[in-house]
Length: 296
Image (cartoon, rainbow, N blue to C red; front, top):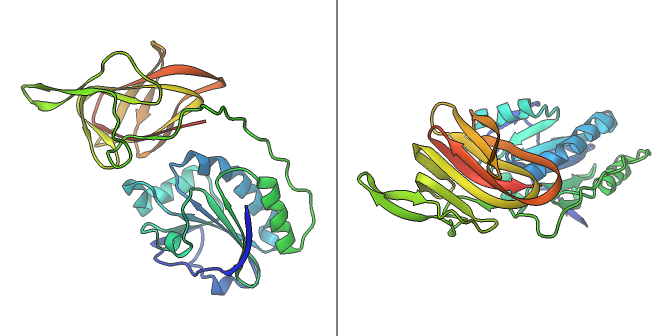
């Protein structure tokens, strides 16, 4: 968490405003502004939302304006309609600026999801915080900027294992290490064959998949993805190519459920109270695009 004093850049290239009329930094002088750079498939962003909602509820009447600047990671997150639906589904009550071309992101030279910028009543950035955590300290800074007193909420810290599985992208832009080899059949040489033995934190496709820049796309069902992980929670960013598809979820050889993939978003496919190394299989019955695995 960095403390500094610089003029807050103006909003640039905003495609739409949600929950508010258009805002400007110049028009917000006299208010304390908290900008949160986020995107709706980011698990780290989603885990910070409860704090932002409570701060909005507690301090809006005292002059705090929270603005979630939605700067996308994936192409489908640029769609204003998708962002509006996510804001509604996530029950976000404060202002959201749709920064689909990342022009405001670039104006702030931002690099992380989530990142918070606290701006004082004169329009100067006084604090920058990247990532999760330190929410009690951020709330104290908000109180100081507003000139109000109160007890900051006690933060419940999540414990993480040092060897928790890392965020793993599927597209060729961020992943050149798929575990399965390619084979040919009468339809072409784009059939991935799962070798059967799996190293940890490696994606193993099986079936007719195509690796694009951002995603793996199942071209012909059925298709399977295997991944050995160490975590308590597995989230997968994915969406159907056309109509909704079903994904069977199999953990260590046992079917644990079926997920309906009916939109491009993050799906939680596994949760447990403890860390342990397990193997996840997802079997799809229709064309689907899988973008990334994230863990908690």
